[in-house]
Image (cartoon, rainbow, N blue to C red; front, side, top):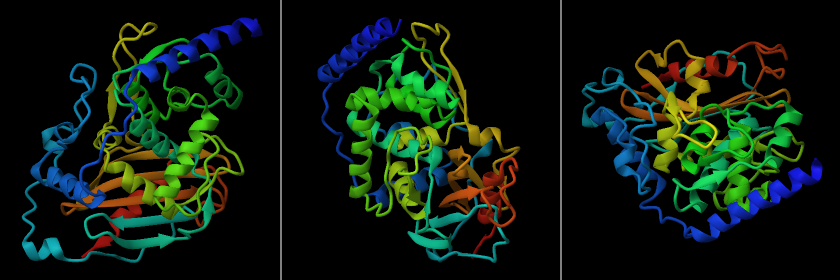
Length: 358
């Protein structure tokens, strides 16, 4: 039976390599700096919607398969900010003890560090790793409508670690864009491994690309061993490095669109004729995304026993965008004491965002 699976896996990997060779591998050129894109995203929020589809340079047909990002009555418009208000520098009121051992809060518009806690201390990023997986995949796949075959082999670590999946099966043919949604919304391990195998031939080779990208971004204390975030002592980062990564990732409008989506339905596959439905882990943990004066727009959660509860999120308050990374909740941090308490990372996000003042 092992020989049979090996033969099947060899065939599938050969098919994926052929598709990669057939697709143009040129990286899409980014237009403008991260600051410019963030400014556009701020404009989109102020204008009353997330116009990321119009900003994207990738042709992806998702009209029938993706749910609306947000309804019009949820937009944060009409706050009447004056020019003086728009140029003011916000601060953070005193923040009570939080569960997370590490935290970084950035004002994206002013590119200002508003709050930090052990931001340069090494921590395990868990599934926040998948933010880098998405970045490297997007920058190396020219056509996100390309189908990728999920090999039997890539599911073995999933079964061994009892890791969360998006719901795909061995041998399933899935569009790259659908794997990206499965990667960032339900945090599917098979999506990460499938993208890694497709782009680089193996997860190990893909990790090399992740580390190269980390160096390019100036992530000085980060090292990736895998594309999934499954625990490894040599797989580590810091809160400030993840904030740097997340800020960069949000300049890719496809990632911004996925991160701010609460649900999604894939195109039909050879094994799922009706498609596969996803729900954002973050949105599922919140009764409401709103806090006084603002709203959490989306984010990526992460958890392992060693990493604790982690969260990289983006929020808007008084028409300004903020980025927050927290990690280590429930691993002995103040208020956590190593006790498993549900949604500590989300509770910290509301505490910190709610403390933003002017």
